[in-house]
Image (cartoon, rainbow, N blue to C red):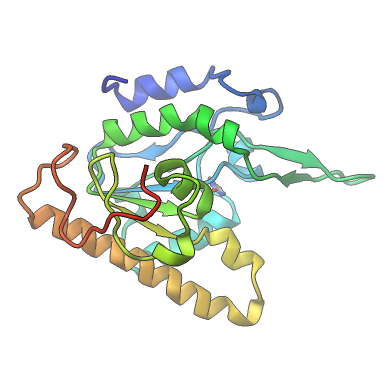
Length: 225
Ligand code: URA
């Protein structure tokens, strides 16, 4: 896929029918941020709020992400934030007061959406890609990749910039409340590692967005495709 501007990609993705998820979603939620952002963050898919508002990470997980970024010394406004899947996948709860419950996208849906993510990576040209959770990490690094084994460590990727994988902020919200501060601290530590890897990539001779060797400190994951 040749490099297309983010605006052009956003317009094209608005009518994407590559998988059936568009039928039940309100809209395509495309990534947001600057071309040239040093960090490109990838979540799983838009949630209920994101689907309604049309912007990534604006619900509870987004608020936690923003707090963690700030505490890791990262300005969200200077990043590019997107998702592996651009439509909200959900099921309705039974009975009155129906709520839309998030469902994990399957491999076919993730694969169908991958060209948009790769085009965003190409258009943004980040120094480091941050995968938030297994869906994002497996979209880019293959289904055998385990976040638990590699979290917070830059791994070489075939896309040019190294990838730092970490947990999804929603998993911290869903987890044991007594563990929340500890989980948040580990999440922040991983985001700091991504910030440092981006700084290191800036000072290394490797050209941004090229297929030249990944930044120093990047390790190839066992499950790299
Ligand atoms: N969870 C995600 O993975 N992405 C969003 O945009 C919101 C919640």
